[in-house]
Amino acid sequence: MIDIIIIGGGAAGMTAALYALRNGKSALVLEKQGFGGQITHSPKVENYPGTLQMSGNEFADRMLDQILAQGAQIELEKAVGIEDLGDSKIVLTEEGGRYEGRAVVIATGVKHRMLGLPGEEALVGEGISFCAVCDGDFYAGQTVCVAGGGNSALQEAILLSEKCREVIILQDLPALTGEQKLQDVLATRDNVRAICNTKIDALLTEDGALTGVAVSDRTTGEGQQIACDGLFVAIGLIPENGPFADLAALNDWGYFASGEDCLTQTPGVFVAGDCRSKGVRQLTTAVADGATAALAACRYINSDLSL
Image 1: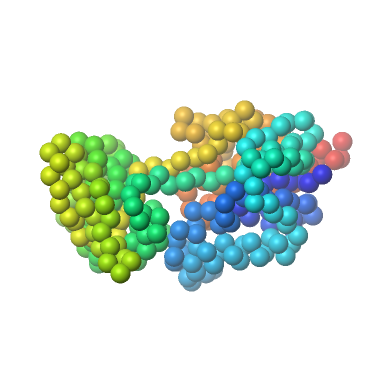
Image 2: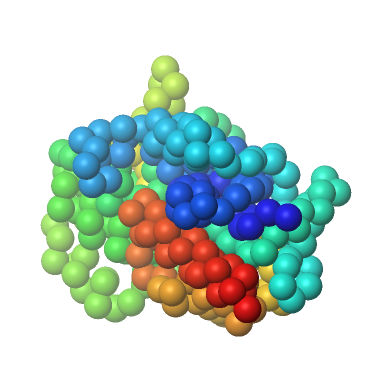
C-alpha cells in the first residue's frame, strides 16, 4: 500500500510529493498530461523567491527530477474517482488503474478558459498570457489587450496600466461586468480604454509572434484590426474537481471549499493548489499548499498508525 497518493503533477502536487518523501512516506503522483501544470505556460518566471529568472518548464523539470531522486513513483494516468474504505482510499483512473493509499492529496489545478481561436495554443507564452503579475513586466512600455470584462480582467488591466503604454480591454458583453470600484480605478488611467460588445475573431501574427487581434462588433458586425504586443486572456478558470465532490465539498464556482489547512470533510483526503478556494493563485501559493497538505497527510497517517 502507498502512503500518500497525489492526484496532479503541478507545482502543488510535486511539492506535496517532496514533503511526503522527506517525511519518510511513500508517494505516488498521478498526472494525466504533463508535469508542471499552468506554470509551464510562462516562458519567464521572475517572482519566485531565491531565483532571479527561470522558465516554467525549467521549474517543472527541476521539481520532477527532485521528487524522482527522493523516490517518488509516477504514473501518467487520469484519476476519475476515489473510493473511501475508511483507513485507506482507492484512486481509480480512466486507464483502469486502482491504487490504494492511506491518504490522498488532490492537486488537480485549473485550466485557463481559452478563446478557442486558431493558433491560440501555439501563442501561449509567445504573445498570449494569463497572468499580469507573472508576465506584465515583459510588456513594459508596450500595448496590450485584455480579453474579458469581469473582475479578473479588470484587475489584470489595472496592473498592466502601471507598466504598459496602452491597455485595451476587449469585452464581448455590452458593458464591463467587474466591480464598480475596479471600473472607477480604471477610469482614472489615461492609458486604458475599453471596447465592449466586441468579439475577438482572429489572432494576427508575423513570424510566429502576435502582432494584434481582429475584432468585430457583435451587433453590427463591423470589423477592425487592433495592433498589440500582447494579449492577456482573463475569461475565467475551469476547475476539474467534479469527480471528487462526494469526498471534498465544492463551492459555487466548482473549487474545493477548503481553507488554508487544506483539509476536507473526509479524513485522509486533502486538497492543494489552484483547485482550492483561495484569493491568490500564484506559484508560491501552490507550493505552500502542497507542503501544508502533505504535512497534514503525514500527521493523519502517523496518528492512525499509533492507534
